[in-house]
Every structure is written in C-alpha cells, then in structure tokens.
Image 1 (tube, rainbow over the protein chains, first blue to last red):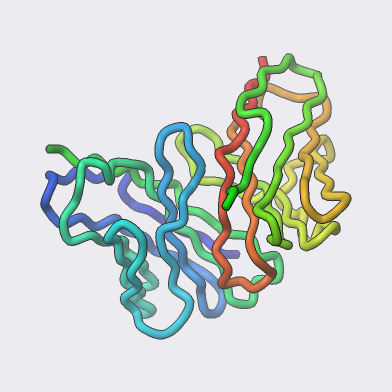
Image 2 (image 1 turned 45 degrees about the horizontal axis):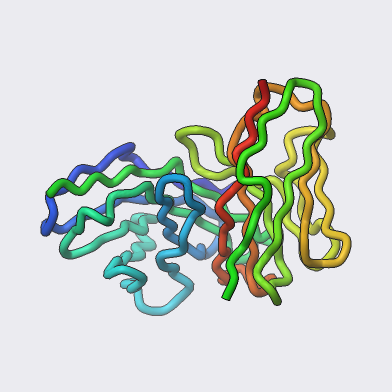
Length: 115
Length: 115
C-alpha cells in the first residue's frame, strides 16, 4: 500500500519570507511524486512532479520541491511567499509499478500568507 | 484548450435517490479517473478508466456506485440509493496516457449533498 503524510494542517508565513510545506511518503519501489494546489471552489491544479533525475524539481508560480529518497520526503518550497499563494496544498504519490495508476493524496496543508 | 469539465457543479438530492455525475475529459486524454473528496481531506481514488474499460475500480466503496465510459471520452458516475455519507465533492481527472509519470488534470468537481 502507498501513503502520504502531510504533518502540518496549516502553515503560516509572512509575505516575502520563504515557505516550506512538508510531505513524506511510503510506497513499494520507486515513487512518482506530485504537488497540487487547490483554491476555494476550484479543482486541483498541478504544480510540479518528480519522476527521476535531479532531486530539485521546479514548477509553476516559482514553487520547487526537493526529493529526498533516504528521508522519503518531497517538501514543497518557495523562496519568497506571496499573499496569492494562500491555498490548500496536496502532495500525492504513485508507485512506478502501480498498475492501477491511482494517485494517493495526503490530507492537505493550508498555507496562509499574511501581508 | 479546454480543461476537464464536470456537470452539475452542485447537486442536492434526498436520501435514497439516484444521481448521475458527468465528466468530460480533456480531448485526447485516454485515461480518466474519479476521486471523492470529503471535507478537510485529500481526494480518495474511486475508479480509473483506460479507454472504455474500467481498469481499476478498487476504490468504489460499495455496489451502489458504478461508472461508465461507453465511447472512451465522457464518463458518468452513478450512485444508487444515495446515503447522507455519500455527501462529498466528486472530482474527475484525465491524463494523456497510462504511464504512471503522467500528471492528472482535474475538473472543478461536483459537490453532492444528500439530505
């Protein structure tokens, strides 16, 4: 079975400061890892993914994430937060050999960026 | 281009009634997924189609839930004898192909409320 943990229900950060949203995963074999963002009353929007290669992945809106195999983590980061980044963020995993192709999501982390 | 669309955006029904939720995937996407998102939680996998066939329906909670994709494009999620516990946002997603590294693109969801 595969699982994702997002240990923080909410992260508060001041505008202009760096932000980190944490994610750890459990999967059999090598993982594919994804971050999605959800704004109120809207569907999930894809931010970035890790497939293979460079452990630092860059995505939309200035976000990046670092894959750490030894710590089974895929934390989302941004050097300078914007108020407009305030939203619900979901980490998701899929095993490389997952025939079902389903994504397993974490419970989500609400990011609040204050001016 | 057009994204994934879902209709209706909101559906209120009474306990015991039958409902149908529709998903129109991105043109050319062969894989289609249904997820259910309860309040305060991440999306949970229901069923996955590759073409017209359900490749994995292991996430369907019971036999009251059924989904079809007769022509390999539009899909309908059908719920019989609805129960209050079925209330959730039902999300549809599509992806370009079966490869596990393909990101899924989500629709805005249908909010189902069972009274």
